[in-house]
Figure (tube, rainbow, N blue to C red):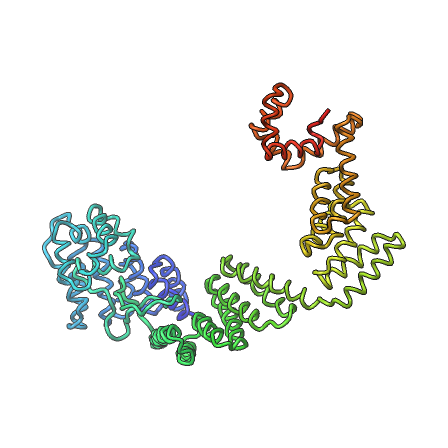
Length: 562
């Protein structure tokens, strides 16, 4: 249990979360109060937060538990330095050098503690003062490259202006490296028990980065060191796998990702990357298996929800590729929904919409059966003859599902809807007839009749006239035009009651075309001229466009001709 808490502390320290590191090291100390390494690690964490009094207390405990360990005196000296206790720091570094005369960290610490200082000097303040800071950073190969980075230069200027700001940038490894150069302190672990902690692995596809020094060294067990080495090797295998994937060398990519997984089973990106390769190769079963493992392992490790969503999306896409019928899309759609609950990604949403659309199209294809459609239509005809219109609608609807291209089923259902008084539904079916077959004359007949019943006589006349273009001698179309003319003329003769006229005009005002004509300033002036200026009205009548609009208003009952 103590080792587990220690490992968590080391990881938190490496990521720059020193407060969490202190919590974990404290837990480990409570479980193993005589372990000198735990006190040493917590001392380093305290020092990183400038809590030097606590750092000093832990350093003293470290030396007390293991007086022959040079690292304890390094911690002790660093804590005294933070408290500006330079004489005590000098003594601590000297004692450490008596144990390990070649320790570079102790040597540099002693040199810094021994240099002359004024009564109020502070090594951190002095380190950032004057042009000497820039000269040191330029001279050092490690920090020279940072001076070409504007954000680093800006950060250093802010710290130079107010050294107390240093605490704000403790997680920036460039700043910590610069601090080491300025204080002549080598941040990093000595050989032996006290080994340097490196940053945790990244799950993104990034090139291998050069190791950077940590603010302080942590002590690792042999098991922890081996684990880190395995992670580094796994990362290299992953990079090689990425390179092979980009070259479409899929077998090599799978080999590298598989090796990475053997080395490190705590990074699900190796699984999701291998799943991507299987997907490209058309090995969908293998892809799905890797995605399932990634989701399961990711939840165990509390991995980033975005990575879980990525694995689920990849699985869903593999299921889509395997789909052969509409039902096969159901698990894919369910998987995409699960991915969206983890992370609402636009790519996942698009894949979901595509899958749902493909499923619907397949369902229609699978349900398509012209023979059954004709049988259902005939059943509908029988119920229609028996005046059982709801039952007839049911069978006509089934016929449409079985054969969506049959205009007769739409026409028959439109007739049923008309009988039931469901005029908007009937109009929709009649328009569908014309959409499917513009030469189907019955479609115009159905549509014109419904518009007539809706008292949209001008619209009904337009429909009948359109039908006559396809069959100029069709008696049903001719009768429809005659009825519409009679109704329009009836209004013009003043044969309508005030209530009927008002109702007709109200319906006409709902027509967008009528609304546009009446809102046109030019047409408003034309209407005024027809009432007040006969000479101007005669000129307007020579304009075909104006006369068409006037005729529209007359047909709609808005304008009456006496």
